[in-house]
Length: 232
Image (cartoon, rainbow, N blue to C red):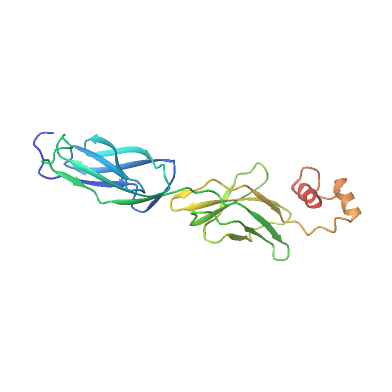
């Protein structure tokens, strides 16, 4: 390192202040310094207990850390310009302290879908998920299709889909969002855009279904399976 510098400085670069992270999920913590012999990072848990997660030589620090509790953590980086971190006679610098919000984010439960044949819309509703700041709605058609994002940053616990085609079965899932944290998808729900079926007591309708009459009503098709479900 040659001649000792007269000053030192350090900045915690990741995560950023106010970040949300998922509990028990590894996070990369990074810091950068100026005129540093080595850098260390301290973590203060929600109970106020401080621990150091490692010391690395040089002007760059990077380490994986897992937050094991739900709550707010405080982080800061510290640097020294000599190799003796415990020597109070050496120059030491600290970064600004940041807060990391650790959450246990789960997908919403109780997802339901209702088709409005008059207005040609499907309305989704679900139970509020704890710690969720918003929701992502995903949709697909067909059993083998992939879910695509239909809407993001949905603040309410309901959503109306009006971008529909007739005689199609749509499948939906919802994920919770809190800051940068996204939960797993909810259990799926399905809803078809078919005309309201006649009474389940209508024997001719049952005969049509059971004998696979009519375009698109063969066994295994979306219409057939949806109508079979509707008839119980």
